[in-house]
Length: 601
Image (cartoon, rainbow, N blue to C red; front, side, top):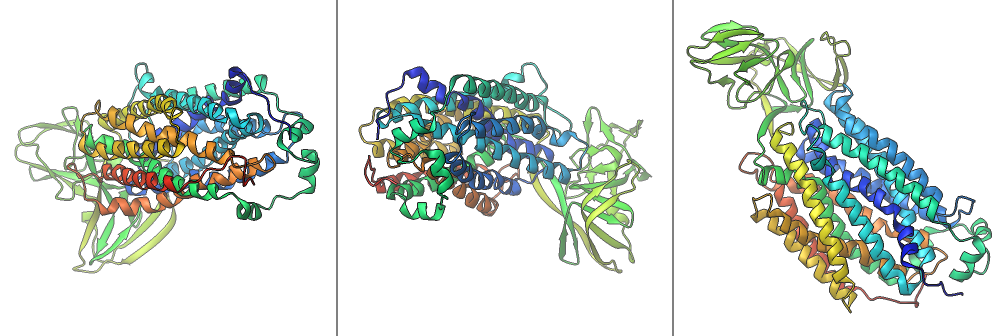
């Protein structure tokens, strides 16, 4: 086997430069996706389930791309064809995802559309990201792999910084608020900007990187037959490769489990945690369904015949009582510049959010505006809901998705469930949940600041990566980094200042630097060139599976913690859980035994 030559700094740089653009896309996904879904109207308890799709697609795509690229030899290259396909799909999807709430869809439909876009985005990012890891394995000798992955880590974190701060920078020029259910322009244009940079990075990579011809690759990697012939003869048996995998594949994988579960919870809950914990974002009560005689029926819409009673968590409003006089109000009720109804906003077409403790609102001595008419209130005013008009003999109907295509109230219902016929004396009440008001300025400001904090984390990771390279013991540096990150996660619980939270996220950056650099350096030193792409694809399972498990458990874990001071879910406790996971991972680092050029697979 011929030794690979040392490469110049700029050749090492060019191998990984495209990672900069890919990581911008990944940073926007990790920092803004939960914000997008919350803004559309998703329940915080459901957020972690949305995050099942990204690692699930990575679990499927990465091994396939790795194995396929090991056997691909054409004039475009070996790894680069997968890069360009993944990048082009990502660019298109990045233009659609932030518009999920602006296409005239209902909340459920917008969330479904967003989930489909998220699936394609993460699939394409995974396809574009994997080739860069493989190129380092293909071109770089063992002496320079530490430097090569450090450069890749630097570009990765630099791209992250651009993606993370894009919304708050664009807030200097664009609106950071939008109508309820729609994503602000700052987020939408951040995705457009990221797509443009990704395109430029892909073009640069194709201009600067020329992959080895098959015979040269075979000589450098000790492969007896030419790779293209080998690929045609040999079918890769991934299970057999896993059986023959070096022990370090599994010991590093255990550490990976705790690390990636921890960061999955950060990406999922950090915006909500910061909004409620440091920005005092207001919370709102949303209707989740109806209880009839003690039995609950929960869904998005509730109808009485053709009359809409509950629409996307809001109780429909049939009118108001003002000083004992009943007035129909089908549009809005305005007190000064504030929309009111039981302390929560009233929405167009007589749909309202009404507090669970009653439907009255204080308006004595004030002038309110009802459907454009000014009315002075002497004593009190209260809302009259359509639900209060339900009588014996009515049959209620639940619908998971309802469409009003022509805006006339002629609804098309999907996935319907009929409730028992209402009888005299039946007790009917509404079920409520408390969520943060994602349309509020405080919440959207927190979303921008979350990007800044993640940028601080990425910058700290770049700095710590330099320090990390000076450790004589990789295990000591790896374990210490995770422990420092654990302290950062737990400290968020005790800090209510947005600025001081930067310290917490800087500490998290130490763990992030180690997670990006250490596992691949340790693993690739224990692998030969014949199946390196397949092994790196399989190793990605140690990133994806922990996130899938964490996502499945997220809602259950969140429900364990009591609501915060504003009644919103205690999402900040999920960051404490992340800290505990990292601390456990730091202990398992000491179970790793590195191999260099021996026991290779």
